[in-house]
Length: 164
Ligand code: DLZ
Image 1 (cartoon, rainbow, N blue to C red):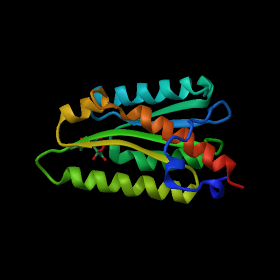
Image 2: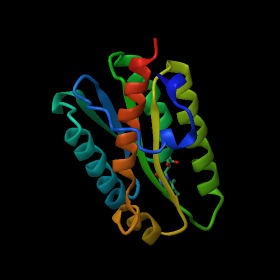
Image 3: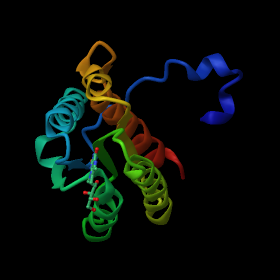
Image 4: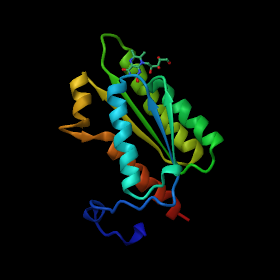
């Protein structure tokens, strides 16, 4: 199908696929739970709105964002019928280098798990300077990045299913 696209503008409004045939796992960090709870609600509601069945969404809380790649790995290893994993977290800049270590580890870890299992593993982790920036992106003035993560998961699950 991609070979019929003639220029970049053809990519700009790809439709959001119906999710009725797909199974999703959501791993969500408990750190900054007021933010990650909103991301989770946004992701869950968006999947339901696009046809995903309730019984095809499994949810897994983990302590912090650092645990998300490991959780995704365990989920894909044990639940082989999951089509995509959505990882949700919120890392807020502090006074130490902890922020940099966590962000880099999570981004690299999520990338590597997806490649290892050849399945979409979606990076829905806010990395912000302060709590207000996170709130703005968890149902505030910049939308809800949980919704966006769910749409990405739907598109990538469908992408994977249609590649032969
Ligand atoms: C330790 C820590 C700190 C300081 N900050 C955050 C954060 O802003 N967001 C987050 O999701 N997790 C944080 N954590 C916890 C780590 O992700 C992890 O759970 C611990 O280092 C234990 O591995």
